[in-house]
Image (cartoon, rainbow over all chains, first blue to last red; front, side):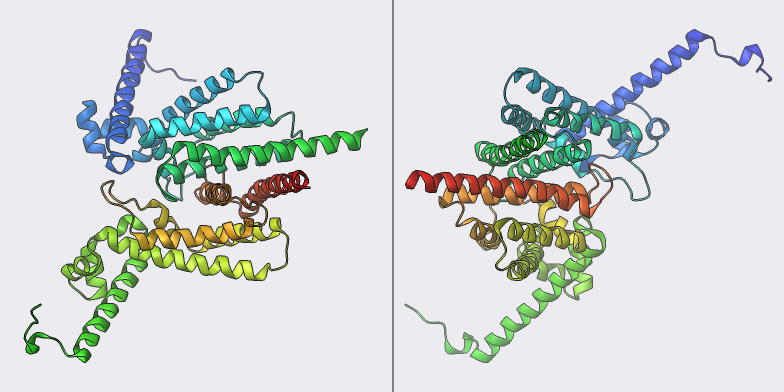
Length: 222
Length: 222
């Protein structure tokens, strides 16, 4: 194994400085992109404009994020983390409540997050990667962590992991659909109370149904 | 009341001819717009390109549809009608089945329509009118007619009209959310069977829940 001459190896402090510089500029680029999304939505995101706002070159953006899609995934990751924090906070507040109450707390926290962070939330779902490109594993993991919050709630009622994952996906997508069509006023004017009532109708039905199934399972075991 | 001189009143035949010309050119503009949406999606819709494809001037488009939003609503109205025909066909095929089977038939027809007519279907939900503008009454009526298909199925199980409307909205939005996130691969790769399984989980829970509520209502009446 050959070593590069000592003069070519950056001193540890210099390497740290480079890494810190990269982190700082990357954070500035993400902040600039997020600000554009918050103000005008995903369609306003343009590399040249972000470079101006972040005080760097367009080349630096591509160097750090690969392309605009990589940068948008970076912003959307931050949004998923912020959403996750809200959902976990709602979960903590509802400790000791029954399943319906706990699932509703998650759903209402989701509705509130979408209402308050409308454009950032929308960007997560509006952004589509080119068909040739797979979603990065880190992003898949962040998404899975959110769904795991719902799965954890269902653990006692649905012991089978595959059925539980299906149920969590179904509940999340049902809540998302109700929130999205309400906020976009696709079925009528936006009424948060009405949206919450609709989600409660579904969550009440689901908790009743899986409660009855679990009861039947226990009876069969006896 | 003053009348215009006879020479300024168009002969009935000429008026008919004008109307027919307007209908013909309007149909050509809508067809050209729909073709662009089918090929490239809503974001590719541009007045100049449509004018070229339809063989008319940009002024004619604005003259007939008011603006691009009016034109897109025209295309989306056609999509809602096509969707309505599929849903009604599914309903006819399921005559005599129980409520769960009938609601699932509607949901699966919706999933199929969205899968086959992906970009047209997407355009209905991606298009947002400027906040200053109300949705035209005809479009609201077309949308209501689709939701009425679900409400009709629920009539026996949920006698209260307001609760029934909520339930129909909840079910439609839940199905839409599951179909949208599946097709957009937002929770994982698109698997139509999995999407159908998730929707069945919800529909089964809802029909069980409203069946039990109706039964309790009947018991209270006795």
